[in-house]
Length: 583
Image (cartoon, rainbow, N blue to C red; front, side, top):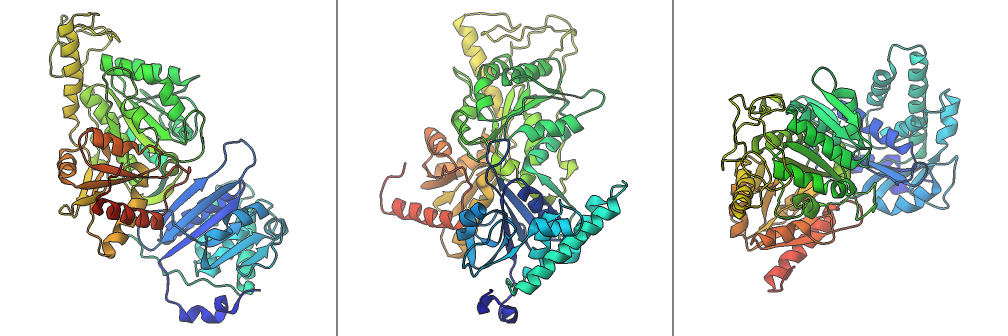
């Protein structure tokens, strides 16, 4: 029975709300429900962001997905839950505490019946789906029930169903009708329950064209826009969807996608392709980066353009294959033995993933060497409606090919020159040993000195990394990296609204850092770095370069919550101002 405070008569007493967070918890089917709601909300004109977490076993195990719907661009997946849809008793018990005070739980009464919960009502999801003639329409029953709770437009859901299932096949009309009936049945049940949430404000439709895309897909699209024409990959969570995207889209004359038998084969293949004149890429996760260590050292030494995408997950070893973490920074910055420091790009949003994919390919060409592109599980799986990328901002850097006479010494100069191609003039040896100008092995000290200075010196060519600086006069700044950017940004804005004098620093390129960011870092009395790892890896690297940095760390396999960061940033500032040492 719904409590009076949540009953129909209270709706006029509340102002509208600008955000709605819906969580679906159970097993496999919850992913479809979240994707459908997100796509519908985006089509209706709202801004959306999804989050998913699931177990690593092939079948079974707890899954939950979350959709954050807002009238303005979303920065995080949302701290608290307005509507919880529990497909099982385990899901109900595990997630009910995430509900806001006046939130609502919709549970699958065909599976269980929780005793005495005043915030919930039950629906037999599967039974209703069978009654309308489509046993697979249970997720539509759920979506129909969500719509009236927050005044979300039911017709938008019906339009989504019509577009999704009208495919020119026999039986399409029957599927559309069954799903529409499922929506109606769910909506009727919600009306009859007596529950209401504060109404969601009408959408403020953006005045720009949008696309709905995941982080992994955005990286893939951006890389192709940057001129990628060769991809080799081994299936590994959470990077596999990049391989799948490439298999479907990197096709046609002059393009090649190949599923290899190991991570070692993947790095060897893209080095071979880069040597042969192709723009090449692979994507992996932490265990794969470990296996690629020697190959990355080879690409650095031989100066072969290629891109390795690291979609981070919990580690070390097998770790948490389907959870999120930002703990591979040491491994990506310094993957090879000896003196080598890779260029590292770490996009912070789904939109940035597109531009990062293109930039990584261009950087590899520009400085003629390997580039690490770092993202993480929470961003890889996140779907979001973003402004349609401006393709005019992406100009693919062409391969500079040597066309002169034989006798060319590719490695002789301190400055980069064009690359010879196999079978063409200017042949050279792509050598993992220290080498002379032609690439022949040498142990002469002067050659090692010249080679080392050349390899590090050419990093100065990578000087166009995007960055953000706000409230530069503040002595203390917050500096996120990677996929935690949005959550940290929301915390930063709340703190600024509270009057906290705090600066904002952000760079999509962690190495080399943009000169403007380096200058700002040098002048700060403290830089606070929220990051999802145990060691505080980014702040450690910043301190090694002489900057005064400290980390706020979390290593649960889950993303930050905004309210936690607000409290932790305040605490870090208080400790610093109290004269205590932060490490």
